[in-house]
Image 1 (cartoon, rainbow, N blue to C red):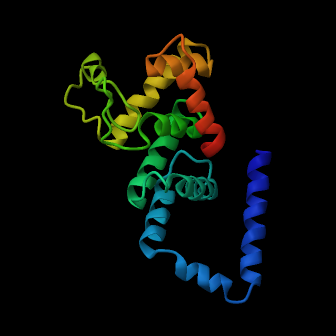
Image 2: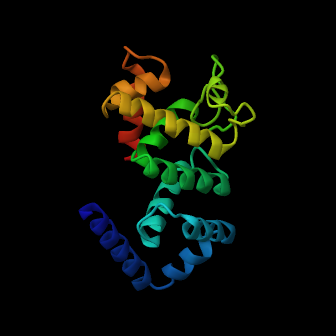
Length: 193
């Protein structure tokens, strides 16, 4: 909560500094792509997993900037972020950790296929579709893939009593080795936390 208050104060101070600088506010507004602004406004309005719209705006703008190097399409970027936040929050997982998993697994490539057949942004193994009786599901669909991935990750977190290194190793199929877990935690610390 204290971090949120500090973040809001910081954003307000930046906003006042921009407004106090002649011509800078107008320049910033004109620099913003109208399509991106519209998409962001729509995404914030549809973001139902946040406590309030201001929190949605702060998180989505911040994470969208971080994600842009991986996903250049603003619509896809905001779709990923909204789904990650909604599903991670519902499963009581930090959304930033899910983003770190996605970076390590696929670099956010929805069409990624691993050498063992895992698919999509969270590299879900296709056998899960048959396990739950939904063989028609498309794992390259962003929402479907994130739904599977976050649910599986939560299962392993519960199984490992909240111990992230073990849960991540199970998610990756490398239980007993911490190389994958270290990669995810490094990505989380350096880019998503």
